[in-house]
Image 1 (cartoon, helix red, strand yellow):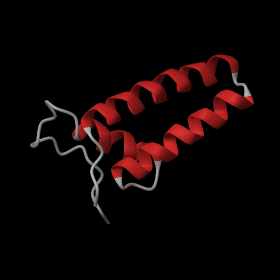
Image 2 (image 1 turned 90 degrees about the vertical axis):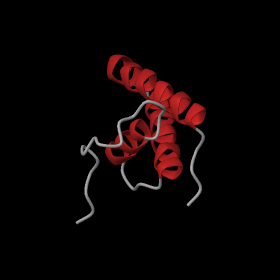
Image 3 (image 1 turned 90 degrees about the horizontal axis):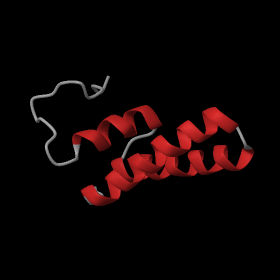
Image 4 (image 1 turned 180 degrees about the vertical axis):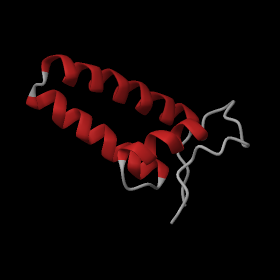
Length: 76
């Protein structure tokens, strides 16, 4: 599996956080569509199928993430 560069993940996480706040504040269709697009891109970049798992995986792939951290979602 291809791995996204940490800089790309940082950018995607920042965009997701900003758009999530914007959508919560104004709730426009444009903000929702952009949030959905970033969520999809995060899923592709992390090899996951839902945004919650993508956010966790992205955080774990950033520099400084602890390899002993067991908060990743386990495969069932």
